[in-house]
Length: 144
Image (tube, rainbow, N blue to C red):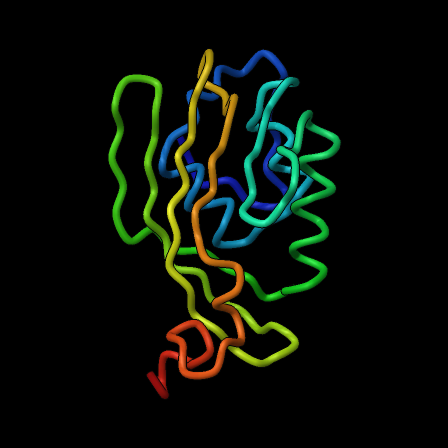
């Protein structure tokens, strides 16, 4: 299957079978609307620092839009990944520019699939690391 881009067209009857390639293509050029095509209607996303999980496609797309509004140049790259049954684990490196300046941050997504679509995501990273003086996340790769 080809990489997904902002102009990708997916028929509702096209079996997707979400994979690491979809994850990587999405985060190389993220668009919240495209994410809605990759998840089940009852998707649940656990974001660090959020008091409650994000539930449903509309709220998930809005949460992604909020993140991208705060860090428009946010990009994630796959560092390592593994699958186990209907689970996909992705260790990623995020890069972007926050209000405190450029950052680089490591994290992990645990993605639970159902019928080839994303049913649940548990995101793990330290949200307080962005902008913390002396942290890896506060330094750009060139100064690290």
